[in-house]
Image 1 (cartoon, rainbow, N blue to C red):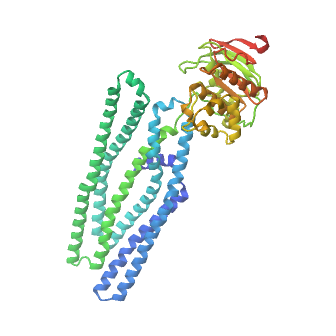
Image 2: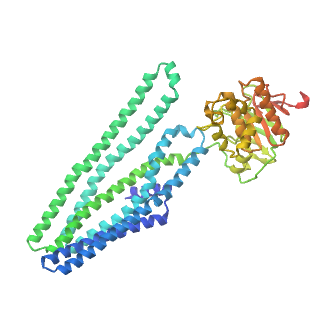
Image 3: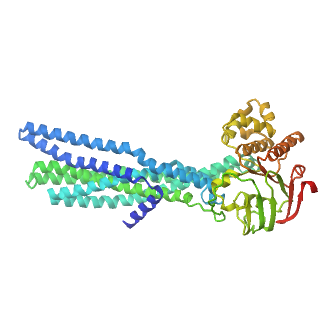
Length: 555
């Protein structure tokens, strides 16, 4: 019992269904089952009335029974009408929470919960959690029906009540053992499904290298091992289901036969009259049936708990090194950036350590942060993105510590471009319209950054698949997208290689165009000397320290 209560608490902490909709679901089913309990009384009296030739009485009893049965179905229909709303009250918010967690999580979180596992969770586990809201409401109604049924049978005939109570206890014990086996197989199936999806992703992603290394057979063998385990788990679950459907069914009908024969014996020896027999018999059958259904729902609760534990792994994603966003919600900034005595210990993070780094970036200018590999460019880039925080010192944006800005303010004022930009599946125009709906503005920006000439030379023009573009044009596309976001500060990590001299000239002209018109502050992180001629300031890094700062008129 304590275990069931604990599982319910765990489920509710994640599902959080609408209390009002849950009450309606439960109330509707209570009323439906109340009608089911009452209707056999009128059916039995109708049969008794017929045996004594009271046909009008029999007709009245049958009409009343019909009305009660009709009400039962109407109450059940009410429950079905409420079903999608109740499930949706958990399903939609839970999907939203998972999406938010996945979007904010760092890569390290996906080592414990790979993306394939998350996709499987969204496919079934989230639905299991949400759907249990309805099942729990029905379970409460059925549990009340079992209690009322047993009390009713005790009131009519205590011997019959004892028999039904003993049968229900045996029922619970037997189904409990079968249920434990079922849940074991369900967990194995979910785990093996995750592993199969992960290995198939690996096979798809490593097609070229697996051919080069001649390891295709090894990868296939690993996949087939997990597939065999999956099939064995499915076989175990199927056999367990067969035990419930067949062997348990034999036990169930044998019990009903024994109890019915006992009732017939009691009627034959005048210890039970015919009317009471006709009332008790459906109660005995329904009492045993509903007890089985209630226990099946308890089984569903444990399945929902398995799903809850899986989903909780995503909801509990943490970012130990990630500082909470502040509350300052400025709509716009100039782009004045100051690093003041910033120190950082890289350790195993992959970022170079910084030693007392200080520099000033003026707004609406192009600043080049250069230096050889290992100088600390990536560390500073990641600090501006707020992926990591300094061990000491401060970073200011317009005189405010960068970590005091709200997530909304930081996102609306700062964007970045990497050497390998990501694009969503779809055309160039589709990707750009995600950040700007104005077609004329899109064409203008693409023309300024030097992308439109190439786009218009392709057969499908702006409908060209974004991910099919050559690397250098993907970079230009990402720059166009950054401009279209309307954010004041744009950080470019590594100046693109592969551009022709003409394309480089157009791109550098675009960078100058947006700074001179006081639209953007541009920061370029690159060891390349290609853009030194357009930079207003060059900040040289070496071994995590500033080795030199040069203004344009000093070079």
